[in-house]
Length: 594
Image (cartoon, rainbow, N blue to C red; front, side, top):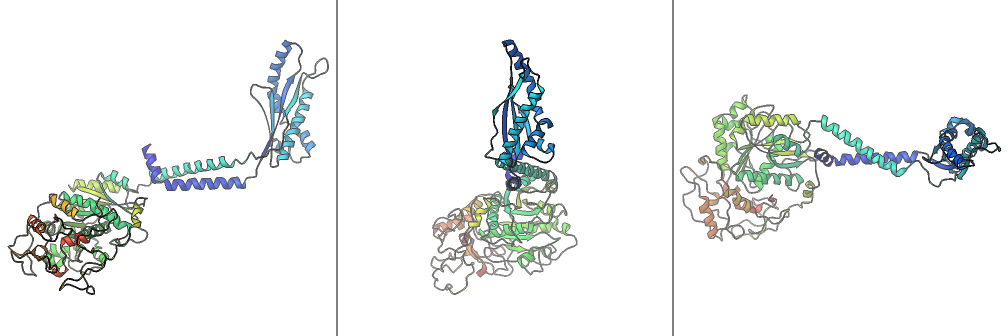
């Protein structure tokens, strides 16, 4: 029963359409049907008897004769005289079809009904048949010794022209049309469910994979831009996915691979949007294209870069030169690089493991865009090196047995599926809530500090993201929510062991000790913000950084900040382009906690 209720809820729009079509067809049929009027005349069979014994016998006799007299009403001996009286032409059979005679059960009453498009013609025909039926009964019943008839018919109701037609019954027809439309729609939907093996919604995907649903992305009309615009409903849905990924990161799962069962389910778009919303929350994110078969990441992001993952794995290019930095609030990107003849073998090397450990050391989140599971084995190879796999299930693009096969393949390879993303699911009422999300307001330019940039000079942060003051909470759909809460949550959670940070080859190493920046000199970056960890240096302790902020350093809202210390920038990014982690967290105007 639950399956039928779930089917009705999932396809209520189609069922409603079938019901409306049934109602319209029934109403149209009623409109085109000629109204029919029915008139009725009633007679009673009376027996003439003398004594009480004869009365009882006559009553039994008349009850037996009622059926005979009722059948006699539609015979030619009655119908032809009635037609002659009314001047009706045509066959007797056509008139008989408009007549009916019935007897009331347990009584001696005979009812003669006539149907005609004209109310008066129906009444006249019923009265004429009743009149000639009475005469025919008098001719066939035996007579008594005194010459009177033993049985006779006496009229008790004379037919009158009816005021309302008896056919069509518009209300009944419309009700039957609605029921018939619903029945037809339910039948067709059930047949489609039995024949169609594609995944259509997130509930089916969860039941097939057996992993929790991390997020659901609704279908986009037309070609969806990548990444999704900040004010679109899809962007809000990816922010909900970010909340789930942040919970995984709190448990130490910061290195995740995004894959699917078959091509065309939106794996690359999901990986790009996930990395974008994670970076918008102030986290250091690296998006790695591990699809060495059909790379698409560089083309979607508009990157022109020849070196990439294969270049680093083969030792031809250092990691610092292969990673493309897109700027503050955006993820760094490591594209696939030149194609190789043996992608699976290259991904399974120890250098790939070392590279992922190095990326995990430098970034808060590492998102890998992998090829689908069923066509090639690359996703299983990469999944073994990650903390888990996020399986993308494209509604309407993958079949149930393909999703089951992909989940079984990952399980056989020892790859944990930490959750799934239902992509291109139908829109619902709750998913349309994000349509009313207003665009980010452009705040007024703050007063320029001495030696700092003026209002006419360009700034590094994008317009419309930075608040007016350091303690201003971001405007979100659910209210004022400080992004530092997420940083504190990630700081308390255990994380996997990280590999050592490689030395810096382009910029000089920061001195071991440096004075803290003065409060009246915000343009001077402190060692905890922009200092690069060089050879032999030790990364700043997170607890020391928090103590320094609690003692008087800028904490964003005047409270003690539990945000982790900003990481050293990659050598390819200049110190002027690097943005402190706290500033990025305060500038996020789109994060909504789940």
